[in-house]
Length: 199
Image (cartoon, rainbow, N blue to C red; front, side, top):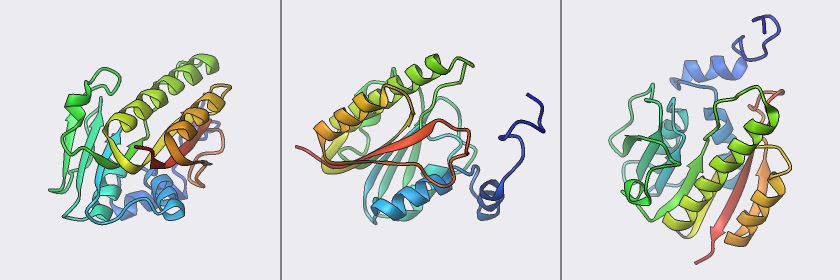
């Protein structure tokens, strides 16, 4: 696909604003909108950020939980941002890391997952892999999240979305979908939010 036709090639207003604000990626505005609409992050919270690279979500969350909060960021790829003292980065695959590698600050008040598969060009394959990542993140949130905690997970829209939402509803008091304004128009991504994790 030529740069002229590729909607991801040219920086948009979110990309430019993120750079100006010191964030490595425009994805910060997705979390900012989710946080604003759901009031997720507060001072002193413990947060797990899965699929943290390049680091925008981790930086945003760490700043909102403040010095009394704790954040563990996890990704296969290194971060492109230096984290503040209240945050720690672990490089690894959330699909294979044991819960014991992720429980440094558990139980967590919020589990975030911006994980997405490396796209293959096959819509069905990409959707299936996204569902797998979402369900792994949800399983981690179920195990390591505190009672009453919240979960935010990215998933590609597909026939699997219904099953994913059903599982969130089973585990949390409230479930909703949010597609942030900063999501690019061609993207299949949407975020499922669960609040009030059942004990």
